[in-house]
Amino acid sequence: MAKTSTQPPRLTVLMPVYNGGTLLRPAINSILNQSFADFEFLIIDDGSTDGSLEVATSFADPRIRIESNGRNLGLITTLNRGLDLARGNYIARMDADDIAFPSRLSRQLDFMEARSDVGLCGTWYEWESEQGKAIMKPPVDDRLIRFFLIFDTVFAHNTILFRRKFLDDHHLRYDPEYRHAEDFELWTRCSRLTRLANVPKVLLRYHYHADNTSNRHRKEQVRTADRVRCRYLLDLGLIPTDEECHIHTDLIQFRFYGDTKDLEGAAAWLLRLTEAACKTLDLPEQFVLQELSRYWYGACGALADQGPSVYRLFRSHPCAKHAKLGYHAKLQARCMLRKPIPTPTCNRPSVPTSVRKES
Image (cartoon, rainbow, N blue to C red; front, side, top):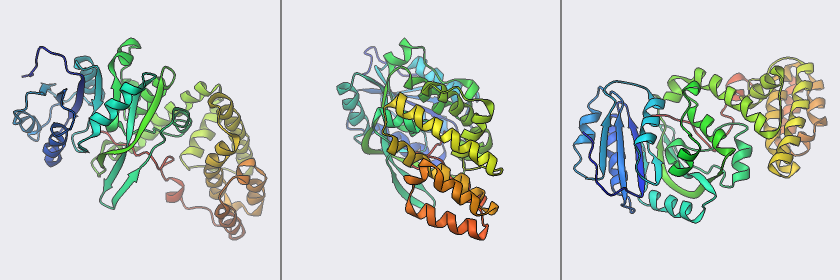
């Protein structure tokens, strides 16, 4: 079923498909209409039951190369199969329900050709949901990317462009032990071996909808991502205890609970985290404390029902000195009224510049 040519392409576009529905055809067209043309388009059908395979085979473009798993093997197996089958020097990820803007491949390829020290890059992107659209600008610089990996993935998975030699030289593939957070886990491993980057240009429209894997498997994804976060702390030179791992993930996920003694433990952990981030990533202390202040505010806000002592503890921490002024006023009022931050607010995504979604 696969269509191949004797001359290897410069780039492989890898698209796993499982029940792509009405969004599949425009997603395929967005790749075929790229300004850069020297690529193979590797589409792997993962046992679709909605006619997606038939949609893919209806295109006559010779750059399309179609493989079928025959049955549903899951995203990780399909992605790893695609990485093994890819013939291009670069591999671009693409989802079956998104739109790549015409210059996406050329812009990323030019960036990677100019930056031999970068093993993979993503891009800025347009996030589209039923609530509207937003421009998402994840960090561009390697140091900032590695800093924000403390909290969550900082790439939209479907914007990634890999250097194939980098993947093969280091035997890098998606790990099935980290299902639903396999991309986040892979980025943390890559960060030890190469520089990471995001191209500061909006090059893809990202569809976010209720049927995304991240919505259907949210609880499992959070648990798996927490494992990645705790393991990543080792890369910062930290060896957290089990209690510190719980503190860290609860802070990051805005689900902190307990009493003032627990809050003191969180305060100490944030200081350790600040010291490690400044030392390992060579970041200014003021920047790190400012970024961590939202989590310190979230933890204190969750315990505001315990009164003014919580505000005094908040104010005494170095994070508070670099926090938004609004945090001080809001928390002081909450502590006076003993009105904690409600759970839905505490459970908001930890890194608003990056939204996770899987095919």
